[in-house]
Amino acid sequence: MKNTNFLILTLLFCSFLLQGCFIQDYFTKQNLQKADGKIKGRDFKGAILEYDQIIKNNANLPEPYFKRGIARANLKNLKGAIADFDQALALNPKWAEVYVQRGIAKASSNNPQGASTDFDKAIELNPKLADAYNSRGFHRLALNNPKGALSDFAKVTELKPDLADGYSNACLAEMNMQDFKGAIKDCSKAIQINPKLPLAYSNRGVAKLNNKDPKGALEDFSKVIELDPKSVLAYKNRITVRAILKDLKGIVQDADKIIQIKPDFAVAYNDRGFAKAYLKDFAGAKADFEKAKNLFETQKNKGPDYQLALDNIQFLNTMQKPKTK
Image 1 (cartoon, rainbow, N blue to C red):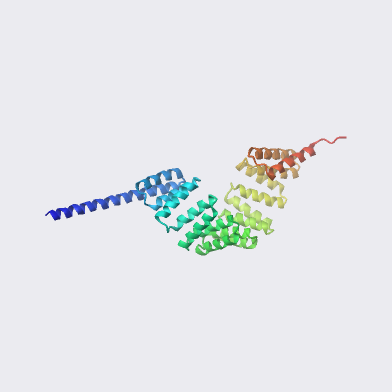
Image 2 (cartoon, one colour):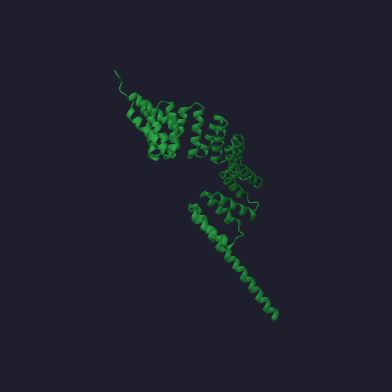
């Protein structure tokens, strides 16, 4: 009878432990979902607090370290992010996605060799992980290795042939190799897959401009603006093309738009000043160059564009001086 009672107590105790583990797993899963939702909503500080609590309750799970690392990276806490990725890998050394994210964080922390090692490791662990090739491709571009980057982006398109970004990124690598025809071809493929991808039109526009097709470039930059009306870069690129096509009024209109979106963008005042000067609106041109000068000084940016503003102010002052008899 005693043995039977002992067996019953043992079974009850084991059942209690199993229920406790089940309850803990349930709440951990619920808390992870809550934290993940905050990351999706870009509430990174709130997500970190949730992951902190999960780690406090169970320090042996790699997932909360990984995701807290992503949240920290988005808050520019790269040191903290790398520490979290290190811990996630200590718990699960074969998690390729963590190596990718740690590589990105290391690249942003001025550790290019460490980043390269992590991207290589991610690909070794999972040769079909497109994100690893994509991240290594951008890293190679930053290291002035466009040929290596193109190889990686080509692998992305092989693994994910319906991913427009892969072709758009290949286009970027080809532009860095001065292969503008190849760049146009890949960007066109990206646009064929996703006609609403602004980056593909932007890259193709730059490639067309370098391939001596300013009108084609103008169409592409205009399409970027249609898709993303607040893209300062698209308006700036279109100003460059308008200057080639001698569309002075168009330059003024695009500069107006940039200034409306970003009032402290000093270069836009320089651009508008040039156009106004050619349109013989000398007073307007001088006002724009002076505004550019003041902004450059406020921003402590006394580079070539600042000097250009000074030179043009001086030139216009000379023009406006009354002639002596």
